[in-house]
Length: 244
Image (tube, rainbow, N blue to C red; front, side, top):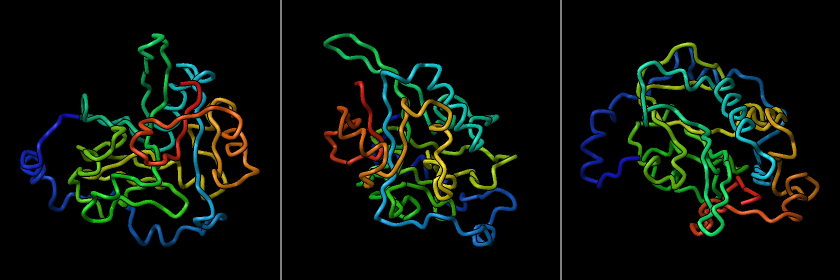
């Protein structure tokens, strides 16, 4: 992301902050209210997380994860956005160990921090964290200021630069709003795994309740060495990695 000082940032975003939260046609607050209640209520007794094993996750596996996310949420088909303007809810990146020159392939998405910087800087409370740890953007409140994009140390958020069509009813995407990985909250609330997790073997990416001592992810984290990306920031991320 291009670095801007605060004054230049405000100048470049002034034109986008008024009347920009355009939601998909036919998707309204009333629509959401009419949706059936999910089987798993949101509670702080749970914290959803993901463990990604870089030793078991191949480059093609990460491609499968990206494709599954795009198919599930409809991003990546923008017509006019190019370069850094393109959406990227989940990215394939390479990490090189300077000491050993070992290269690892990572799937990087919103890390769903316990202390999310994006929430701290949002002026409208559009960036929010649910009780179960999933970090989301309320498109009805987002004014497109992009403070959250600047605050995110993982470059995990995207800005919608153009009008969109053929959107998913469970994931409206509005021009002038910010978006990112939702951990497939619409599936999680129904007791299902996120689309990216379902696209690969359960050993390569494990999803579950970090607080549940009987869950596979909790038990695995007790046995294997794992790390957080930018652990020095003390954000206590919900996404963990092993093998790096």
